[in-house]
Image 1 (tube, rainbow, N blue to C red):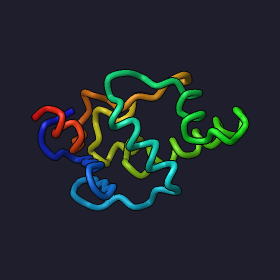
Image 2 (cartoon, rainbow, N blue to C red; image 1 turned 90 degrees about the vertical axis):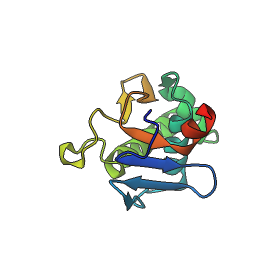
Image 3 (tube, rainbow, N blue to C red; image 1 turned 180 degrees about the vertical axis):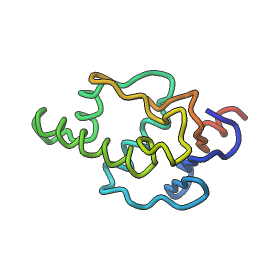
Amino acid sequence: MKSDPACLSIRLLGPFQVTLMGKPVTAFQSDKARALLAYLAVETDRPVRRETLAGLLWPESSEHSARTNLRSALANVRQVIGDRDAESGVDPPCLLVTRQTVQFNPEGEAWTDVAAFSVC
């Protein structure tokens, strides 16, 4: 992760705040979508299995329902942070997504206050 604010900026220490190209990002469909982004932004050192994320965020749901909810939340997160939009300027992508895992891209053009704080 970059050491200074970049096109995607995530603040988790204090109130949750995400900006993209300096503009606030507020179109998250749910608190779970925000929690997904926050979790991935903190756990950048390794890919996280989808079933782990689904169980963590929807522990009361069946596995099928939890994974469906994860797909929906992940699609929402990717859309609102411009991870699928070539014109957003987010290149390389912020999230590395496979059929089995999701990882916040440690080499991406994103900045988080958590990563900046841990370097100090």
